[in-house]
Structures are given as structure tokens and as C-alpha cells.
Length: 385
Picture 1 (tube, rainbow, N blue to C red):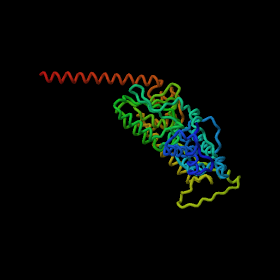
Picture 2: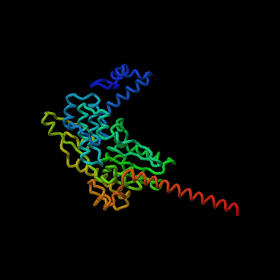
Picture 3: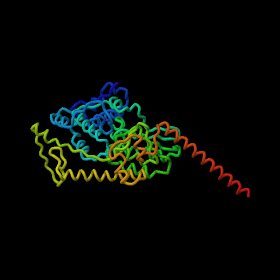
Picture 4: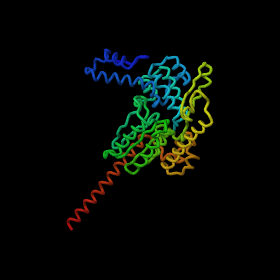
């Protein structure tokens, strides 16, 4: 049976009271448990309006444009929680440099407009759109721990990130550390299918994986896309693999600015910003981007791009100039080109990679067993002497 959901304009307290009394909540005998479920439904609904974009990869729905979302917000159509969070979400997207395929950032912007208009997707629609049913979570195959790096990458875990299929760098780091410190895990396989994401948290994760080299085999496999931030992270593994039909690359950083001034002018809307601080209102959507603001955005993009390129050069053991002048130069490339340019170490299927790691685990175990036997024989010989 479906659980209650907040109605347009309904307050938190009114929703919780209605939810607590809903007949579908009778299966929860404990009042505290019912309240917890209702609070979760409220938070989930708010997150649908503000944060689902974190994990959306491809979606078949057509989205409202950002400007459509803005004007609908003004006339009061969307739910209260959508209006409340819309402005700071847009600000985050427009003021955050992204290491992502460009058309994915456009989809994020469209999705923001879709939610700002009071619309939302069901969890089932999201799973179907991104193929979530075919994307398992972290799992073990023998002594190989497989950790997924799927969907759009963000630093922190939102309430809907798991449902929508994206990856939090903080959550991934915890999974990686756990596998690294587990003596039962012989090798780690990072299963990558991501167009990239926001730059925050990415270099830190890439550096952490790189620092773990030598502790135990860590392999990343593009299965079937390791683009931008995802490639930044994946190359930090001991070995970079891609499946025969996969794509890797998109080394670059971009930032977006929305100039909605002409649209608002046609609607007869004039917005006046009152602020303190010389640059507090620069890059706002109510006026064209100034030369100073453009230069500052370009400077931020360049800084993150330098960080990205240097990390990939370190991870792949090549010069910075080789990454800048090759490695796709911002494009994604297929297996043949990637292997020729040194962007990956080998091309093989997921099953082949798992089998190879398992064989390596057995071989290492056999070698260690032989060393142990030799040590025992030497100790025995020493005692008898």
C-alpha cells in the first residue's frame, strides 16, 4: 500500500498529523515508528524537489526549462518546499565548477526546472530510467570486493542519492576504506559507469585511492563510461581497465551561467538586488555576465582543470603535457584510442577482470603458503642443529 505524501502547500505539522492517522500506517503498531516513517516521507518529498538531480544519468522524460521553472515558481504553482529550496539549489549548480559531460549538466538544469514546477519522479521511474535494477550495490565475488561508482558524482549523500543511482564521494570513501582494511578481501574492483559530477571531493578521493597503491590490488574498470570526475577517480587505482565498448576521458571542467534578464524583461519583471560586498551579486541570473565575473569563473575553472590534469598525470605516470595535449583533449574516446594513448592499461570484460583478480589472489596465496612452509623448515632445521 502507498504511504502518504505531502500535499501542495501543506505544512510539516499538518502532514505528520495526517500521515500518523492514515490507514496505511496501521501496519506500524508503535507510534514512534509511525512518526519516524512520516518524518522520512516529509524529508523524502522535500528532497525530491531539491536534490534528486544528484544521481540522474539519462532520463527519457522531457524537462521544463530553467526559465519556465522560475516563472512558475513566481506564480505559486509548486509545493511550498520546492519554492523554499529552489533558489539556493540553482545557485549551487551555477556557482559550482563541474567535471562532467556537458550535456549531463544541461539535463541537471532541465531537471531543476522540472522540480521547481512542482513535478517529481517516482523511485520506480528513476530506477527504470537509469537502469538501477541492473546496478547492484557493493558486493563480493570470491575474495574480490566490487564497489560501484555509478551516476552523477557529488560530495555528500543526499536523501535520494541511493534511489537515484548517484555516488557520494564521502560514502564511496567509507566503502573503499572498509574493503582495504578487511583481511578477507584480496582485491578491490571499482565498477565505473558515470558521466562525472561536481568537482568538490573528487581530488580528495582520487588521492586517497592513489595513496593505497600497494596495500592490495585495486583495479578500476570503465563499464561502460568513466568520464570526467569518474575518470579522475578511476585512474588512481593500480590498474585502469575498460570494457571493449566502453568510453573514457572527458578531461575538463566547466561552469554554467544563466542570463535570464531578457526573459524577465519580456514578462515585465524587474529584480533589484541589494547587497554588501563588492562581488556578492556577480554572476546573478538577472543581468548579463560581467567581464570581471566571467574572468573569475574562468579562473576557477582553470584552477580545477589544472588539479584534474595533474592528478591524471600522477595516476597514469605520464607528463602533464601528455594529458593536456592528448588523452582525448576533453572528448570521450573508445577502447582502441584510449589504449593507444595510454589512458587505460588493458581492455577486457568485467567477468574477465574478476576472474583474473581471483586467479591472482589464489597465486599470491599459494606463494605465501610456500614461503610459510620454507620458514617452518628453516626453523625446524635450526632447532635440530
